[in-house]
Image 1 (cartoon, rainbow, N blue to C red):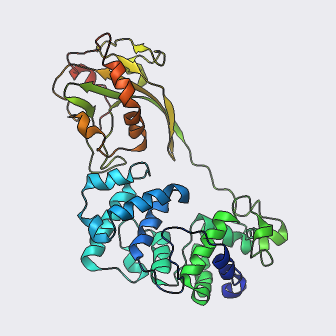
Image 2 (image 1 turned 90 degrees about the vertical axis):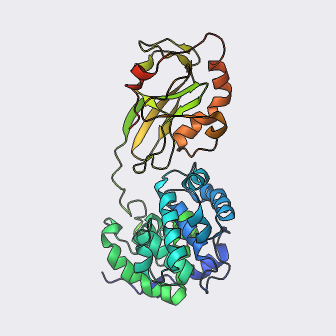
Length: 375
Ligand code: SF4
C-alpha cells in the first residue's frame, strides 16, 4: 500500500473535532494532556462495546457515582456489580471490568499497550483506545467506525479488517502529530456522525482527500459484512410463586448467565402452547396452571426468542434441584438479564391475578421440574 502520509491526509480532522465534539461525561476537556481519570475512560470504553452512546451515558453516570475509582469497584459484591449493569447486556463485560479494576487497584495502571491488553476484557481496540485517550499513547484504535472511515478515505475496496496491521502502522504518525486522544476521538466521531453507513459527505472535513468520494464508491466501501445467522427459539418463561417466594435459577459461575438470576424456562408445549394470552392456562399433565402474560420477541445478536411468560402459584414445598425460592422482598434486588428483568417488571399486577380466584396450586413440582431448562 502506498497511501499519502496520514498526518497530512487527516490534518483537517483535528480542528473539525475541536469545533464539533459532542459533550460526553467521560471526555476530558484538555485533549493535549493525559486524561485526569483513566478509570472513567476504561469504564466508558467497556460499556461502549456493543452498546450505543445514548444508552451508555446514564449507566456510566450511575456507575461512576457508585464506583468512583478502581478500588471501589474492586471491593463491590458481584450482586452490586450486576445490579448496576442490569439492562446493558453482555454481563461478561461487567465481570471483566471488575477483574480489571482489582488488578489496577493492586498493581496500579499499566502504562503500555501490552500491559493494558493483559487486563481482563480489553481486546486490541479497547486497549488502544484507552491508551490513546487516557495516556496520550499513539496507539491506533480501529473499531467498525474507524475501519469504515479509513477504508473510504483510502479507497480500500476489500474488507479493511484484513489490512488492520498496515492501517495501524499508517495511522500512528497522525496520532503523534495531531494528538493521540484528539485524533482517536475525531475518527470515532466522524464515523459515528458523518461517515456513517449512508455518509453525509458534504459535511465531511476529509471530502477533498477522500478516495471513495472521488470514485463515487461510498456505497460499496467497505463491502457489507456477511450477516450473522440468527436462530429462532420459542419458550415459556415461568414465574412460579409459593408462600416461600419466587422460584429462580441461581447464578452460575460461567456461561452467558454467569452472575445472573433467571426464571426457569420450558418448551412451550410442556405447559399447553395453545392457550390464549390473558387466559388461565389449562392444567397440564403435571398439574401446573397459571396466568399467561403478554409475550414478546427477545432479540440477541445470534438468537431471536419468542417468549411466552406464565405466572403460576403453587403450594409451599422444597425447591426442585437447581432452583431456589427467593423471597419477594429480595426479588427486586437480584441481578437479572434483560429478558428476565422484563418478566420481573410485569409481575406486580399479574402475580396478584395469578394469586386470586381459582386456586392454581400444584402439590408437587418434582415431576414438572424434570421438564425445566435449569442448566
Ligand atoms: Fe466518508 Fe464521505 Fe468523508 Fe469520504 S467524504 S470520509 S465517504 S463522509
